[in-house]
Image (cartoon, rainbow, N blue to C red; front, side, top):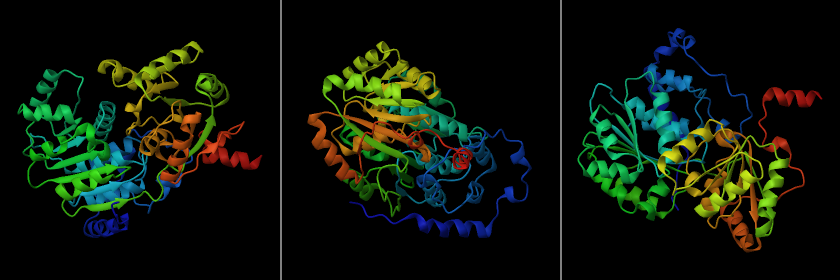
Length: 441
């Protein structure tokens, strides 16, 4: 168990910086009027993202070009994890941050990374490592959008893509690399990716990166970095492997813990007891009764993913599927199209649990119930992103009943029996205007 202080201490660094210098934005606000800012998100949000101290992005003393990207991304104010980590990260300290899925962790590290990049220097200055290819693509997209007014070159490199193409791209000017462990190590060992000037390392979903799946890879990566470096660790869960890594590689890290409870406040959890042969019929009933914007349905094996996707399609519903054994180009297309809203339902394996952010998803269904509390936590975190509302429905067989109770206890959460009618206000997007109309009725 790692003891962590809360994020109140970040006030000191922020106030000190603000007292000495005030960003130009206070003097000249005209640049803001020229930005292409998307319409504000008026949906009701939970305290996971609204429980802030009221700090504005402009108070972090960021470059104007970066602020332009932040505002054009539609990010209005920092979330709690962003308030806690950005000012500390800008001082150069190592950070160990624990926060729930879907509360703005990507912005919490992308913003200070981009702020510290010098675009005039022609070498790799930051490496962001993530455990899955889909998360790498998503993170690189966010980085590119935030830095679109800066002369910063962002590159994504993952397994499953053409290595020669990556080698050609990396010989051009690259400042920030987002990568999965195997591919970046390949590029390092081939002396293509020169990391001797890379002073920032970010580990997103750090618990997964430090698991058996990537045994020893991070030690190898760090051996290629300069001695003077800054490391950010971000994750929702922190097993012993993270503690060992922190003791070995981090230097007096600033610790942030925003995990008083593990599950998102906006996600209501239900279970339905069914026999295995009744699952598809139960799923069909859910599809007909629920107001699904988009749904993600989890299975415990790749074979079951494909079989279930076929059955859902046979029932007449639009359905995609994705799993680790698919060709990378196919995975990319499915991921891209689902995020764009081309299809309403996605069946997947646990490949899709880590950090994947599809804002429109309001229903998660565990067609197969997981055995591990950590897996369950990451699965249901695909719904209720950034403080919005969602539901998680678990199809439970007789064999699953012990796992259900154990996971409830381990996460300190309540999974309720599914009612005949689920209140739409629990998972259908609400706005303050809608709530006022409901009251007036």
